[in-house]
Picture 1: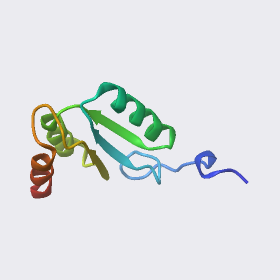
Picture 2: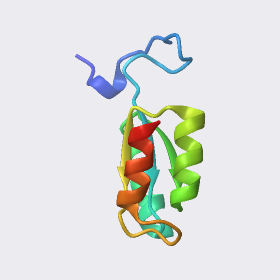
Picture 3: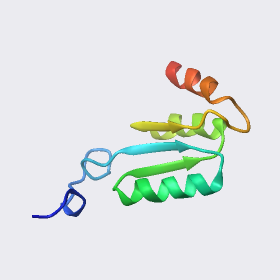
Picture 4: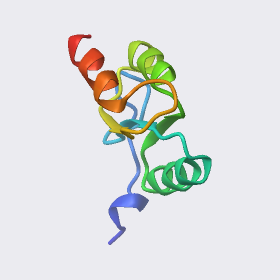
Length: 89
């Protein structure tokens, strides 16, 4: 029996394989962002990684992610403020 990661994936209406999760990662530390992006991608997710709150807001408008991993200490905006704006979108 194949593991879940080895199972063939069918394409959904959004163009991504069925079961793939679109994740927006908002992290200003390059090393952490790269490590998390690789780990999440290796698990079969589609990851958009950004380093600022402004970029996060633009990405939410453009990609409509399924999950957002949000650092609260960002260089341009406070993470809780970014979250408040996202909730109004």
